Length: 55
Image (cartoon, one colour):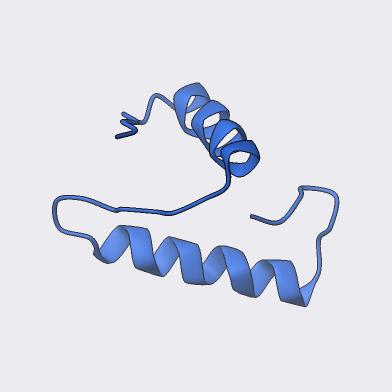
């Protein structure tokens, strides 16, 4: 995931791809991330009251 401070065309494209992938998921979006990235994503989603489950 791009850092908020790294705005630009490349990070915009990464965010667009994530948005398309997750919004097209019908029931479940499975994502493989490093532990560091998964912690950051968990915080981001939890702040926005999005359910998160790791298995």
